[in-house]
Image (cartoon, rainbow, N blue to C red; front, side, top):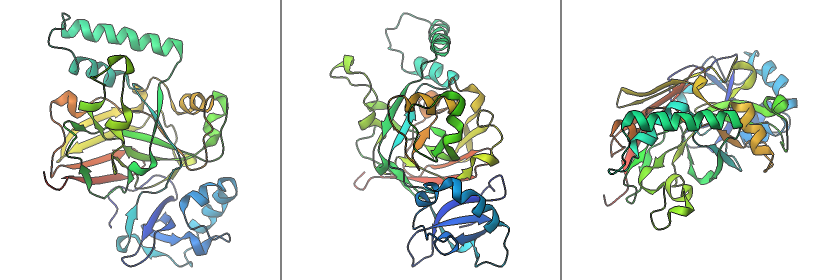
Length: 327
C-alpha cells in the first residue's frame, strides 16, 4: 500500500498487516513501518494498548522513530487497517455553520412558505444562538461501523440516500471525566480522519416526529465509518481548529472547508461529552462535517463511487462504494 499523502510530524501510528499475518500496531516514519509488538517492552498487540500508556509511550516512540538500525519494513508491502479500535465513538452533530444551513435548505418541505434566503437567515440565527449558549450537540456511534481507510464500503440495500461526511476525529489518550475546557486537549493523544456515512432517508423518524433523529438506523451500518489511515500525535498538529477538510467523489471536489467553520472546537467537545460520559483511551470524538454533502449537491452515493478524503497533515483515505449483493 503506497502512501497517498504523508502525515505531518516525525512519525505517525497505524495498524498494519502482511499478506498472511495478523494486524499489528506500527510506527510509520520515512515510508517505513516498525512493528511495536517487538519494539516496545510491553509488547502491545493493538494500537489502543499503546494509547493506553500514552504518557510513557510518546518519548519512546520519538526515540524509535530516530533509530534507523531497527527492523523497519516498507509501507508499500503492508496492508493498512483502521488505525485504532475504539470502545466508544462520540459524534458531534450540527457543528459546522454552513453545513447546517445547507441541510436546512435541502430538507425544506415542498409546502414550506419560506424562500431559500429566508430559510438560510432563520437557521443562521439558530446557529448564532447555539454558539452564544455554548451548547454542543453530541450522540453515540457503534464501534462496529469502523472499517479501514482503503477498504470497500458496502451500501446497504435499504439505504435510499447514502451520503458522505468527512470529519476530523480526536483520539482520547486517558480517562476523561468532567474535565474543564482549558484542560481538555491534554486528554487527546492525536487525530485521524473519519468518514461518517449517513443514510439521509432514515435520519428523521416518519412514524413519530416527536422522537426526532434516528442515528442508529441512519449511521450505524457495518463499515459506515472508514477511519484513518494514521493516528497523528496531537503535538504534531499545530491547530486542530485550522485544518482543511477535503472530500473528492470520483475526482470531483465536494467538500473543501476549514475546521475554522466549527461552532465548537475539539476542546469544547471533549469537555462537554465528559460532563456526562467517561471517555476512555482510544475512544473517538468525531467533530462534525463541513458543507458539501451529497444531499446538498443532489448526488448521493452509488455503486462504484470512489471517495477520497484528506485533512491537512493527517494523510488521505480512499474507499470504493459497493452495492449490497442482490442490488
